Length: 407
Image (tube, rainbow, N blue to C red; front, side, top):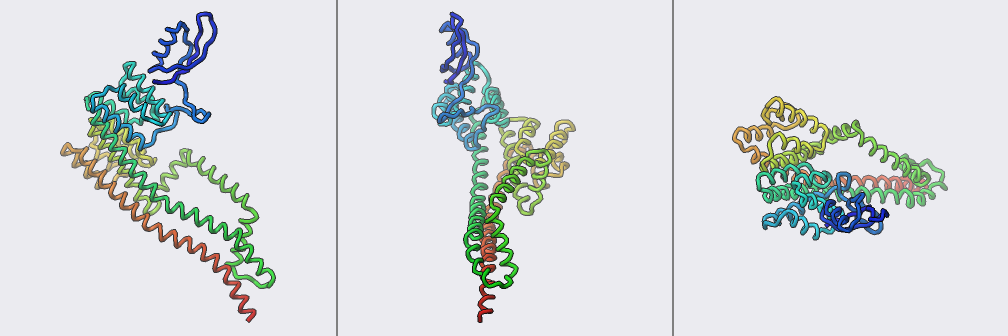
């Protein structure tokens, strides 16, 4: 059930406001009419949490996590396999969910289904929650009668995507921690340790070594102008974020993304893995190649690959080129991928070939991330040691010079 807020007129012409539970907006209006009031406006009531209004998940609301989609599709598929109707299955999932936003969306989806809408159409009203891939595959499942099997494929797809994201996030934890820790150590030494030690050198009137003068300058800059550094850093970060949201900024970011040595190889494999896995999942579910290509292009989160995929889709749909030929002509897809797709097209096993390519790329991505994580640890330690070593050397050099003068 969904909580609806309403405005209505009583038989005496007085305005009335309130809320009521109903399966859909039509049912809410019918309940009001049974109470002999005339409804002026009926809309879903937004949930509140700790006194603050939170927008429910709609086309303009927050999106559902990848793991959340995996859990939902898996649970929904299991209930449908038990021959439980759509509306009852959605109600059971709704009652078990602890996310007020997602519950509001499921309630709206259930209300549309109760009113006679197709499940795919009900999902399509919430594109931030149910992406086009989910809508297309659910529509295919409704037509073919294999919705539970297709939902399981969706769950497997999002489970794999969630594991890959979690692996990437865990690989970034150590470098981020080391960077923040190094910045903290250097800042502490520059603002607390160095000023106290350099006071000893002022009384001797000797020319300090260059590294020591650089260190004292840095210490004075951080100590006296820390507020300016924070402002400049904040403005720089804001400007960078604002620029990266523009068309030129996104294009520059994506070019750099594919131009950094080693990282570009990892990014290319991650993009190709997502593309191959998405396209294989949709083809296995009975989606036509033209439609599957259009939806699969949306997982290419790099503008250079998106531009290449636009040409591929045009060549396949309008020129009738085989997919392998169109991919090869785009210049963005490696030859081994094109050859595997060509074999799949010739043997009518394109979905199987794409699945094999996706699994191979997934293993390569995992191996590259493991190798990068293993390489980053000594590199970060060396970088941190170099920074701290420079500070220590800058402090020790004048001490050794003073000992020689005294001696």
